[in-house]
Image (cartoon, rainbow, N blue to C red; front, side, top):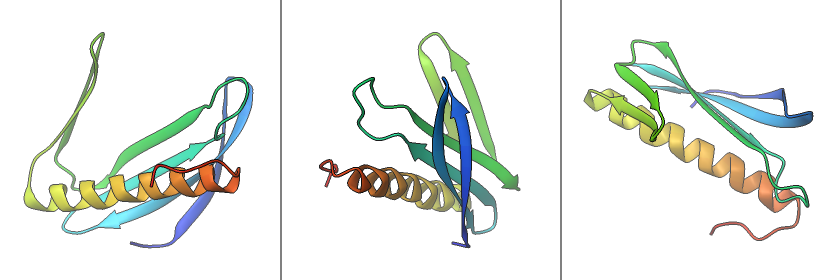
Length: 103
């Protein structure tokens, strides 16, 4: 994994700090995640997976949810690394608020 970049999103009048990581193999994915953590009004959480280079992926959005399909061995590896980065980012942000994490 390469450097982690700090970013900011404004969602529903809330600023969310997100962290973006580039995950490489034969393809390259960008994984970005952030959360407000547990707050009285309810947490707002953002995640994003982006194809930076050569990722064989399909996204379907419908009333039932969001489906992500990744085809290829390299895509499986980068997806696993990207999801791991997302989980760690959210867990770190939750811990910073003093709340118990998922571990």
